[in-house]
Amino acid sequence: MLGKEITTSQLREFEVIEEIRSVLKVVANWMAVPLFMAFWVADLIYVPQFKWHFLALRLTIIPLCFLANRELRKEHNATRTQSVAALYAALVALPINIMIYMIPDVGTGYYAGLNLVAIGGLSFIPFSSTFFIATAVGIYLPYFIIAALKIQALTDLWPVVLNSFFIVGSIVICFLIRFFHEKLRMREINSRLALKAEIANRDNLIRSKTEEAVRLNTLSTQFSPQVVQAIRDGRVDIEKGVRRSQICAIFVDIVGSTERVVRLDQAKVDLVLARFMDTVVSIFLKYDITIDKFQGDGILAFANDPIRYGDFMQRTCLAALEVRQALQQDREFYLLNWKKEMQIRVGISAGYANVGFYGNKKFFRSYTAIGAPLPFASRLTNLAEPEQILIDSDIAQSLMAEGFQVRNIGARTIKGFEDDTHYVFELIQAPEARKEHANSGCPHCPDSVLYLDTNAHGHFVMKCRSCNYEASENPAALVAN
Image 1 (cartoon, rainbow, N blue to C red):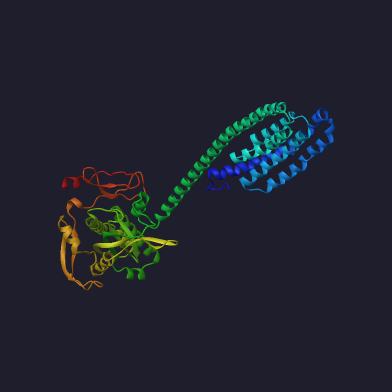
Image 2: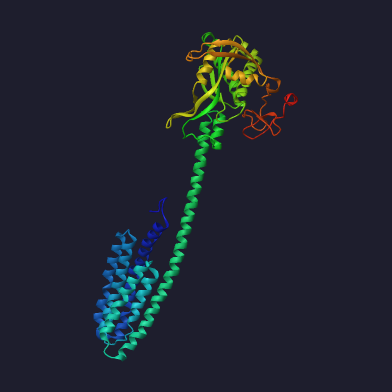
């Protein structure tokens, strides 16, 4: 019953049951029988002629207490538990009412025994208002009926009226005790529930933060840092569907890799491919290009989702130029381990695609793009010569407007896109203002890859996504700008 979704009323009902059980357990086991038998001494003094009759009446309390205990152990409902308690109080008062009936004196002081029963029952048993009234009636109504039957003259009425004042006073006192007791009980219940809710909220917060940290840590091994950061910032929801986005796809493939894999030792192949992947991925992440997938020894990626830039086509082309240059600068390593120069082919295409999390929700999800730009970029790679970067006509027009050097290599038939005539361009060089920015590491986060962004002055700078470290501006770029 004290579960996570417990309400104030449920907790109160539970406590009513437990308190009635505990009160009546004490009363029935330890108080009722001794008190009843102790007052038999008063019977011997006040009405010795009824001493054996009254003793028999007083002894009825013993089976009544056993019966009340047994019934209360079986009850798990607050209403029925209160019914048992009210009936018990009325039955405890019944022998006293019978004694009052047997005593000839109308104004007998034995009515005080009813007050003791009322104080014990109405004050300490957490009755609802309905059961409070019903219990008071069960205790006192027989007395007033008996008194009414005994009244023969007006003089007999006065003792009953006087006793009534004390009876009303006892009921009022019991009501006030019950009122303040209930206020304290509800305050305690609300405090307990508030504490329980606070603990539950704290546990839920800790659990959700832990789950989020574990999930993001897991995602960081599956997806590009841009995707993980977008999930953390709430810009991407892993549970939601895909969306239509304008992207720029890039595919980088190694020239002659099959022949090298066959001829070289496997350890050398693994070493070279690891170096190649690290170079390409680091540069892609620098320009906020999302890694889509590895296709053999090639890398397919796309820009402008989940991080969007107005110059996403230019950024993709800058990344391609920088990848080619970085591999050329690492020429000695590849000559030593690859046994020839590392040459690549690159295809770049722009357009609209459906981007989001694809795959089985239970086992595996992949953040990927599905649309024409990706296979088109792959087809351009197949057309490219070693060390050549081919782009589509839309990208070429955008680049030429910003001073990039491109060359039209004419119309080409693209497999899978034969219905249209496609003019293909080669990317030659970037303008000085957009050339390579040094990819120095973050001094605070050794594993972080700096990415290209603009500062408050609109100048291109390298920033760390982990700690917001901003590298020094490139003086040459500043002059060119």
